[in-house]
Length: 130
Image 1 (cartoon, rainbow, N blue to C red):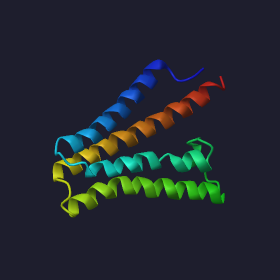
Image 2: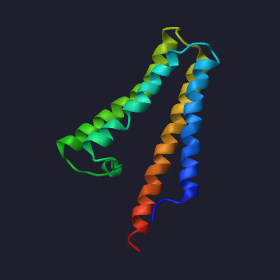
Image 3: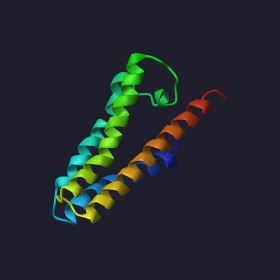
Image 4: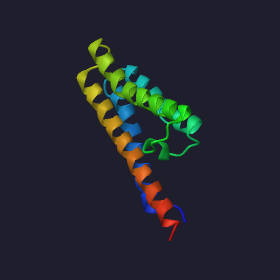
């Protein structure tokens, strides 16, 4: 039995809201520099897909494997990049403060979406044991 349709719809809504805010940060200020952080949104799940087999369980594991450590490091580095890129662009006066805060809100919603997905997948895996 998979995740319920309500959970999937909620996750899809949250992800869509994050992408909408990403686009609005660019469109409202007629400046497409903030779209650089969307590149990081693509890079964040890649270590999980390549080094951990697509499972999010490696985040909470204490395995000392080199590939697992590499996945954790690259995920953290790309997540920090998602925050750093708008801040650097703002510091260089390439984007306005409003666009930067919209980018931060977009990232916050994206992180909440990932955490909700992780929790739902854990609850789903425990539900299969009963």
